[in-house]
Length: 72
Image 1 (cartoon, rainbow, N blue to C red):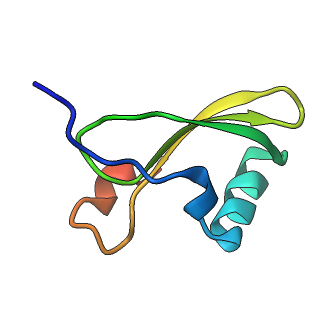
Image 2: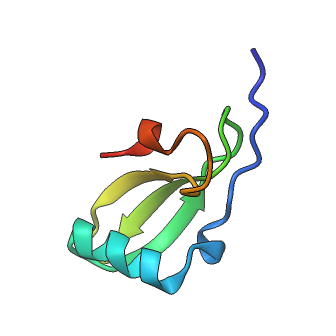
Image 3: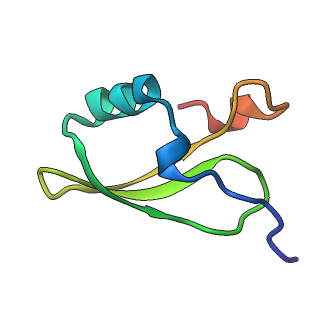
């Protein structure tokens, strides 16, 4: 099976969403590395936080038919 999705870039994530992500993670994002490919559209990024923590963040637009799959 071949990955078919086109991923969003970190830069297109709104300031409000970025602020929410940073508040949940407890530190500002220092760098973002996008994860290409996949089977659903949306964000998939490896984030480096200012405190040195590394996390994987995934998200999908709320008007997509599969947002429940991404719910935490």
